Amino acid sequence: MRKIIKHRFIKSGLVVLIFILIFGVTFTINRLYIRSNTDMITVAVASAKIPAYSIVSMDNVTTKSMPKTAVPQEAVLAPASYLQGKVIYSGDLGFGQGDIIRADRVTEGNTAPVGNLAQLRDDKKMLLAINTNLVKSCANLVTPGTLVNAVVFIKGQDINSVDRVISPAEDPRLGNLLVIDKKNSESTPPPEKGREAIPAVITIQLDQQNLDVAKALVQYNEQGSIYLLPVGFKGDVYLAAQAK
Image (cartoon, rainbow, N blue to C red; front, side, top):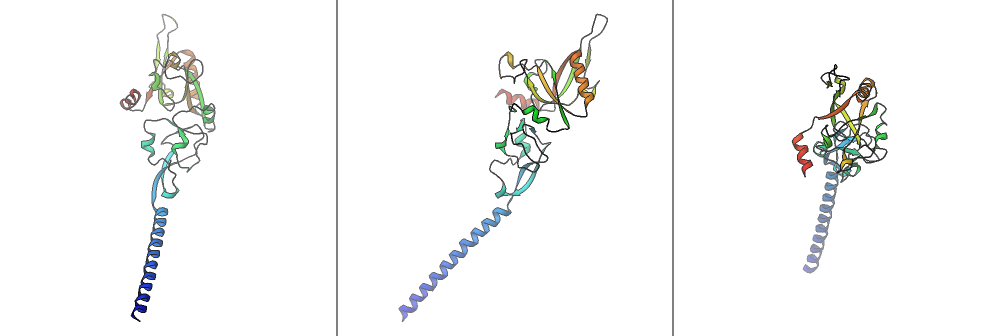
């Protein structure tokens, strides 16, 4: 009789233990599932539509909290540090407003043949190409994505006329111009080294309504020489990066 009672007690104990184990495992799994769907993480998202082959910057990127399970592995989590010191372009898919900025969908080189045309998908913008001498305009510091001030030199027509130098101080239309592209004298992207690396043509992006700025740049380009001065960057950091 005692053996029967002991056997039943052990059997009941095993049933209770198995029930507790099943309950514990189920509880843990449910808790992890709930946590994975409620734990939030801050990611970079497009604050506005970013067309293909367009510059990705803090002007069109913001941050948003999202469930951790909804964030892909390639998501950019800290846009300010990720974009610092770089010129980043969207890929051939671009980004819709609210899309997560993913490292596998951006590039540091706008090499697509239709890159410049893609810029014109924004009907509020227009492009203007100007000639310049980048040897005297900070050379490779003038890169796509750089803001520049233009300074114009117009040589006097004869010995009785004086040379003219015009800067944004005299003509504000020459200030804060956005460089979109640069080409050498053969209209191809400049290589890293050699004389062909000297760019001769710079493409500037302007607001469509700023026709007076476009007219001024065309006139100055025909009358004299335009020099470009990069503005708004940390020179020591940039030069250190170039030296690596």
